[in-house]
Length: 128
Image (cartoon, rainbow, N blue to C red; front, side, top):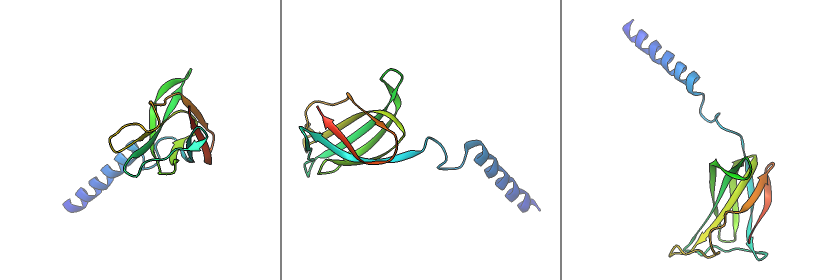
């Protein structure tokens, strides 16, 4: 009887915690897949074999102000990226560093704004 009471108390506690915190995977806005290419001067950028390419989508809030949510992704050797983000407007910041951590695409870029209205496989991001 004591064992049954402990087990039922444990099951009740787990159920209560699940109700209070929600089920895993249900929180937050739905994300969509965004794929595309980073270009500079009309040509796809390249990421050195020993370098690293990253892209960060930061939500735009209000009058073109940075929001709190950021979504990082990677850029492959041919300048392509794939990232999952909620629908909305974003500041897009691409970065490519060589093995010595020097930028290969110039100074940091933070003024590119893109709107995600649904899944896409052909977003073009031109670095000024």
